[in-house]
Image (cartoon, rainbow, N blue to C red):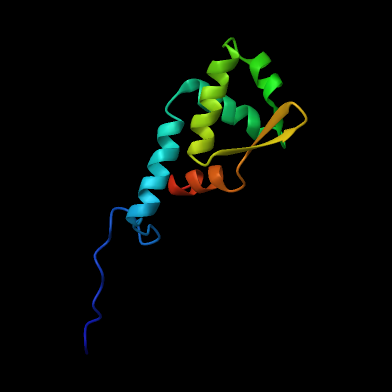
Length: 108
């Protein structure tokens, strides 16, 4: 009787595929953007609504408008949020799938 060869058990599990370099860099940039508590709080707030006016974000945090704008720019550059303008107001929303991609990377 011929023995069946078995593969060694991997600590990461068979469903964990390695990331390519571009994907790793993109994910690292997103996680880096979330390394600030204020940006995590902004993403959390945006996750609870379809979109949010920047004036509401300014009112929700005890920070200056330029500071909130800086945090939003970091999140936008990382591909986590997107914005649109209506008149003089800017509205922000999470990029569809961006947070889901982070969650899936962490095995959730």
